[in-house]
Amino acid sequence: MIGWAVRQAAIWSIVGLLFYVVIDRLATAPNPAAPVLTTAPAAAPPHSGTPNSLVFPANAQGHVVINAFVNGSPVRFLVDTGATMVVLTMRDAAAAGLTSSDLNFTMRTSTANGVARAAPVRLREVRIGQLSVDDVRAAVAENLNISLLGQSFLTRLDGYEMHDGVLTLNWY
Image (tube, rainbow, N blue to C red; front, side, top):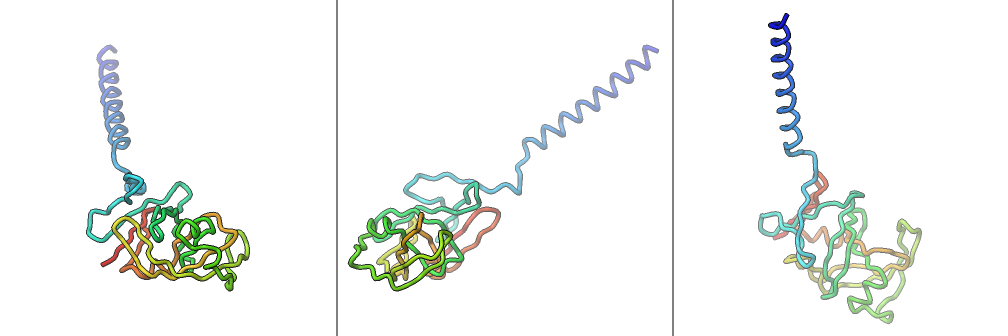
């Protein structure tokens, strides 16, 4: 009877040890489905490690928000691949040096906040880290909470890709 008890204890000890090792390995293994989150100083976007390429992780809501400069002034953009062009808020336009006398609200836009008036403009420069695009077609919209980085900027790049919650911008 004692031999049987010792054998059972040994078997269950081995099973428990194997279980512990498997769980420990699973807990410390990297999750390939998890988005790669990089941190970088506020002034510079994260680099992908390849020349002429920048990467930006999506936030918890799945949106990519980028800090950029328009005509030398800081602007926070929501990347919107469905937006035809770059669209600035009234506040960001004023910071970029576009005065109300520069704005002629001849356009109508459909936004998440409804239909709004917009004024077509040309931006001298949109800069994200070392990426700089000159003479960008844009608009200034009323009733907009955050500026949008749309196709009039994105199509000027060599390419962009959203994969596993990470946006990559590529240019020559």
